[in-house]
Image (cartoon, rainbow, N blue to C red; front, side, top):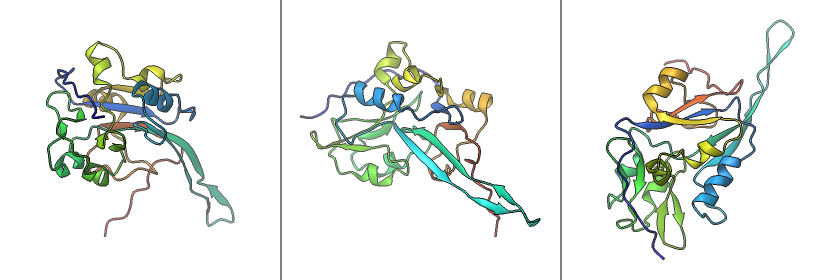
Amino acid sequence: MRQQYKEYPPVSDKQLGFFIDSSRCSGCKACQVACKDKNNLEVGRRFRRVYEVKGGGFIPTGQGGLANNVYAYTLSISCNHCADPICTKNCPTTAMHKRPGDGIVRVDTTKCVGCGYCAWSCPYGAPQMNEEAGQMSKCDFCVDLQAKGEQPMCVATCPLGAIQFGPIDELRAKYGNLCDVQGLPDSSITRPGLVIKPHQGAEKEEQPHA
């Protein structure tokens, strides 16, 4: 059965994005479960995903001791409704599109042929195949809820308030520009609508320039 597609008017004239407070996230996965329930997703298909990221180690200080650089944290990620989304560039039918105004990236299922190019392109794994329909699917920023003045399901469900949303420029003005953390691809690839407050040790180290 093909998926139904309904167009909604933009809810903002500014690019929307997410703020993820990873320092507060407990990894309860309430956002992931609520998103699956709201979108009636079968086992294996998840629009919002909670990852467990760990790494680091003990680094010699050069003075006979060791510095603790161990990190372990959880990170909630969905489609980032990027400013420069690769998925839309590689979609041969224009089904994957970024709408004007609020910049939400959606799949027009009246055009999608299920080729999967968008999924192969996205560094965040956002587009996912709906096997029953033979078409692609992804987070649409709960456009139906926003059209009614409600919050996206993940935002409303998080018990610790670790997920917020709004115009990305306003989120960056309030929380900073960081979205490059351990476990995520470089933000220069797609310029994601994402701001992250990282857990201790989660920030990527600056690489020396050649």
